[in-house]
Image (cartoon, rainbow over all chains, first blue to last red):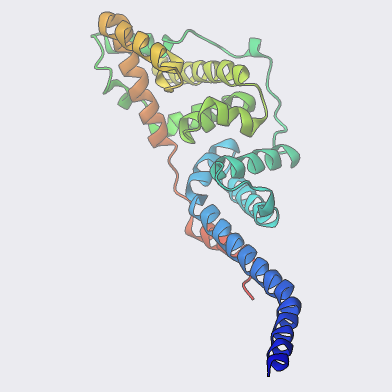
Length: 210
Length: 65
């Protein structure tokens, strides 16, 4: 009786010994599948926000749509390299900006800065004030600018500067996240952002003057 | 003013910037203008994602077995 019980326990033990790795493997596979599904869902939930940025990093809506598909295809393939708990939106945009560079979409190189009209920080403000002839209502005066003209003015900002402006102003990324996405030093983010805003405002001021 | 507008200053610098804006009407007017310009630019750039694209992205997911 006692021997039987020991024999039975051994058998159970042996069964357990054999089945344990299999169960662990199955659990691991199930967990990985669950993590992957969760990752894909989270990435898709962010797609509206990623598109909003992508749309203004490239010239046309069609290019932005292609770039989005390439980005998500790559993200879903290499999801294991994402560190959970870090900024997924920044991770997706890092892929997107790298693809944008790799695919040679940035043929237009940054023109020499000397060829760009760069005015002071308050050039647009001053021009609007001149045009208005009276002290400005700071919060309403921007409505004198058409929304199309803003989109067009942004398209005239050279790529390297525009990328930073789009990530910070439209993507709401911090300087640190933007530096990481574009793989440039934080000081470069700040200087490019400053110049990008000056160029954008200079372009808008031209519209006011004309 | 740029880092203040981007909220990329430490607490001490933020307080310093706010104190200056309280005292200086010249900077305050320009600050208000910059805030509304940024808001306006953001609105102009807010192009919604096409629904077809959303469906295409969802189709890229790994199929469940």
